[in-house]
Image 1 (cartoon, rainbow, N blue to C red):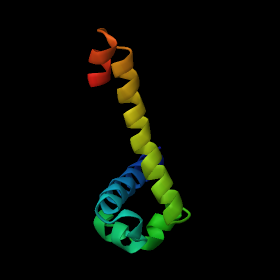
Image 2: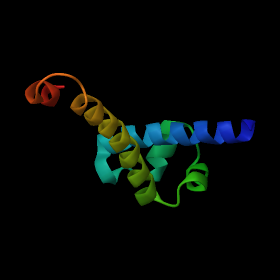
Image 3: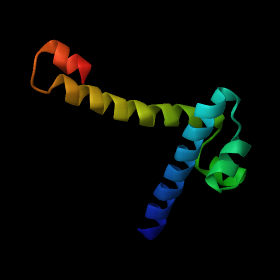
Length: 87
């Protein structure tokens, strides 16, 4: 159980670092830069992600989920359509 929690935490730390690197450098950001930013080795990152493309896709998916939740909450909130759109 502890090992699974640690793995989830490590993966989250790697995704946070990837998000920062991709935000700064776009797709030119490298696994090495993400490793430096996260404090993990490139080999450790490859333990959790097959390649940079997968890491990028998972990073986008994670942020997309947050955005979708925010949009859904605003769409289902009270008020007229313009108020909901503004939220």
